Image 1: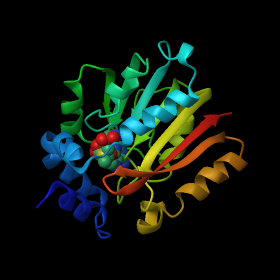
Image 2: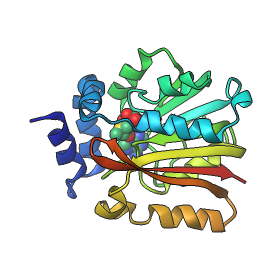
Image 3: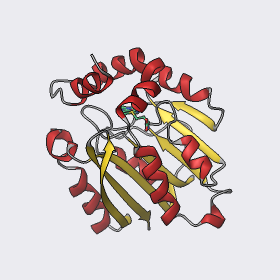
Length: 216
Ligand SMILES: C[S@@+](CC[C@H](N)C(=O)[O-])C[C@H]1O[C@@H](n2cnc3c(N)ncnc32)[C@H](O)[C@@H]1O
């Protein structure tokens, strides 16, 4: 089966649960980067372009970044390429983090699951200038309440950037509430939306959806 078919059989399987996704990444970690290249998933590059537009260039070298659901760290080289020097990663798959470790770009590599009110171990409130999620919102991946943890760890004035496949908002039941929750958090005064963009051909032939929020 092609990489794209394997990926689609994963993300379009409505019966998939979190334990199965976790087990899938254990098997997939070593060939994940190769498969993402083959499917031409360019979301990390596009996300870094959006970060470059929104986060001041003169603050990047000192800024602390937390890459959530970082996986093998595909976003890391793009963040480094636009001037970020202090990056931590959190992901619940140790085999994915073992691949990320080899990049030698991230400082802390935290193996932990987000969602259902869990706090990332060892991370104080308001620690980060930037939090990123690239490809974390999929079928049975990050629960949408992970956004509460994003807000907790962001410094006031800090930015959250998200990249995902657009059609998951409709096709993945648990993601129907993602943008309503983002808007509710804006109404509640937690953050302000700075950008919402849709771009073609970001995940193979699929459209990518990007969000930028600034914490109040
Ligand atoms: C599609 S990959 C994206 C990886 C990377 N950010 C990228 O751009 O290639 C999704 C990642 O989310 C992680 N993940 C899924 N659910 C998670 C959860 N509840 N908590 C932490 N990590 C999770 C998986 O282990 C996997 O590494």
